[in-house]
Image (tube, rainbow, N blue to C red; front, side):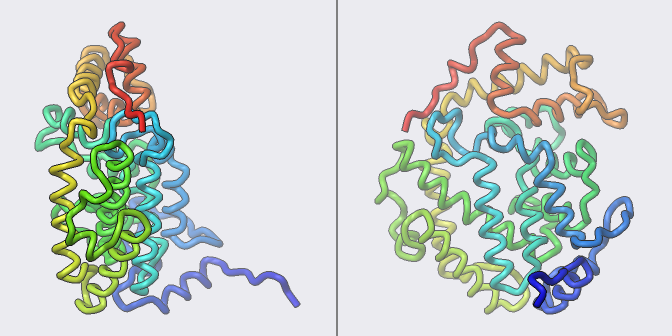
Length: 340
């Protein structure tokens, strides 16, 4: 009796036909910007997932801020661990709803590759240099399309483009809608845990309604939120949505987190230091574009775009050490670390 059974691309594509009617099929997508020969074993979305996992921008996420600037503790969430948690939640949602898990996984893995150093504070620092403001989602698309030229499928690129609820038009696939919810589920739960770890919150500070509906931050809250999205989506029948009652509780929790955590002095740390570091780096490379590394040189882009590409690609620690080397400064020590 054979120990193994070959499950090649054709078999996997055939299995996709058993997914829910609203699921994306790798054989029915819009394809890639440049056509490629098919892989004998992997579907198109599986190849996209693997390309993102091997991308340099993905590896750099391990040293990029999620919420708390320059934490010393080993247990604070980084942009990489956030991404992995979002991926788990997105796959759980997709599996429960009969959607394409691999497409959801690929979008989730790539959703934050465009983030700057110092998280959303970095976005604020970069806004003056980009007409209409700088956003990590647009930078993520630029990375996968141009800077690393991953030649991903249209569905994955669209999901990266519109993973944020701020982006309009919204994503096209139901799998990308799963990632939108997974992102919010992930950060609300793990950021609350980090806030307790950092001393910003006490365990009982979260809104009573959120604790009643979702339980405590961590696995209990994540599980309850996943259940609420599954129930809401099945009731809606066409979209990935959270049930109305839990959705109101989630909005209340999110408003609380923005008031008490994301805007807190501890979460921001030395916000002015982070903004100053990024803007001084941008101004330096604008004055010395010959110092931009070859990997960020783009003959079709102007100098400002190439400079922003380079600076946003930096990790927190690389931005700090580069700043200190260029300016003979000590921003690294000025950035107050958290000591949980």
